[in-house]
Amino acid sequence: MANVSPSTKNPMGKPISSSQRIMIVNAYKMELRKNPDVTVRDARIYISKLLGIGQRTVSNVISEYNSKKTVTSPCKNRTRTSFKEKFDDIQMNAVRLHVHSFWFNKTIPTLDKILTAINNDETLPNISRTNLYRMLKCMDFVYTKRSRNSALVEKDEIILWRRRYLGDIRKYREEGRHIYYLDETWVNAGDCTSKSWVDKTIKSARDAFLRGLTTGSQNPSGKGKRLIVLHIGSEDGFVPGGLLCFESKKTTDYHEEMNGDVFYNWMVNVLPLLKDNCVIVMDNAPYHSMKKEKIPNTSTRKADILQWLQEKGEVIDRPMVIAELLDIVKRIKPQYEKYLIDELAQTHNKKVLRLPPYHCEINPIELAWANVKDHVKKNNTSYKLSDVKTLLLEGIERVDGNNMWKNFVKHTMEEEEKFYNIDFIIDDVLSAETQSLTMTVGDTSSESEFSSDNEWKHAECSLKISLTGQHPDDLTTAKEMVTIIQSVFDKMMRHPDKKLIRHKPKKINL
Image (cartoon, rainbow, N blue to C red; front, side):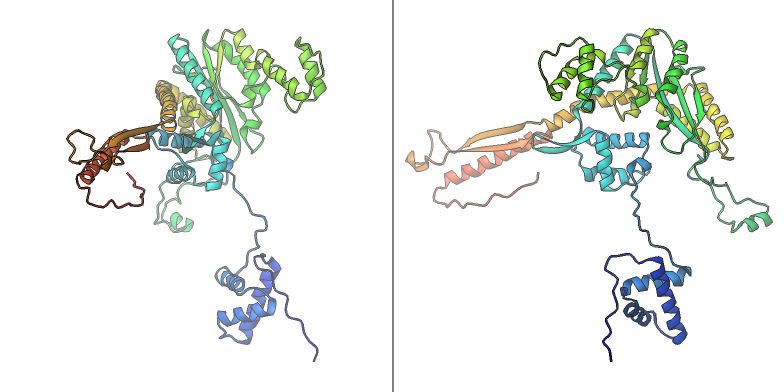
């Protein structure tokens, strides 16, 4: 009899194809026809040997077929959900507030602590540890080490930007200048509340019809079409005539359709509507920050860098490499780095003030948009874009009619004060210097009961206690330790005949 080679086995970990799954089901059916009383275990062993597929895989396919009467195709491409798909700008600001809440409590934030806080927040979507790390990096947080403490802090550039912003806006308020805030948002045709009351006694549409009832609110088929909205307002309310609203042609990020030309033309029409010598607060979106001229950078050709420098009157009298040329560019860059919007505002005697990145919580128009969109969601029943636009206009009028803007601005000023204080708190926690206490123990008085000075010449010693001053009770605890140790040494010196037993130091958590 000829030798028959063994069946080829499916490699461990390799997903089986749809055709292999169908083969497992067909083999299982054949076994049932041959022996209706066959157990799943026996069938699993037989099919595994027959097809060279693992018993667990065979068992899973048979279980799926018995429950669903079908088999699913394997997912060949693993879909990875990015944090950008789950978190919008407002939710990312909520994450920033969670990080700063640790500093307010004088606790050093770590990735695990922040992850727990975010996943316990019902208003935020759950996120994995890896995605949280990527999001914090995107928000310009860095993990740094200062004074023996590792902590998650913001980059120095963001801190300086925020400090400058808080200082400038305080100055403008003291000068009595009127402050306007602008920002864009979007509204989907399918926006609705995430929860609603449902009658659990209704079993089906037919049951509702026979009882003269309804099946409840209809759910939208998807997000639907989208409106892109731009407006500007102050403590007096939204500026009349400042609304820009148009239908989006894309389903991706709305920032792609709000380009520099659209925003510039809108600003041309809005600036005459604003008070003289006012301040306009906006974020640092690309279309808000179109440069008046392009400044050379590391990707610019060397010839173009030379030409730009010569046009600015710089004399290049010797051969230079690109790094040297860019160093000159960096030196004179502030003179020529100007924004189109800033120049336009200056022609109308107005000042542009830019928010630090990811600081929407200190822009009160975000609260106004949240209120407007909440009105849309609570009243959207048709899921038609025209009706959604009507609800949007109603929401804007509702905010103006109830004078909500004053409260929004007041809340923002409170948030600004928190940010102003938190920077000092972070410095105090991270820069806490080591405090040292030194004491001398031993009886050196003239009334010592020991006859010889040499007998206890080594009895004197110095005890140094070092601690990180992160808590006001630390110093008190150290002083109490000194008192206890002093009394122990005093007792030892009064009884020289007793042996001194050395103990291995142990770490004590205070």
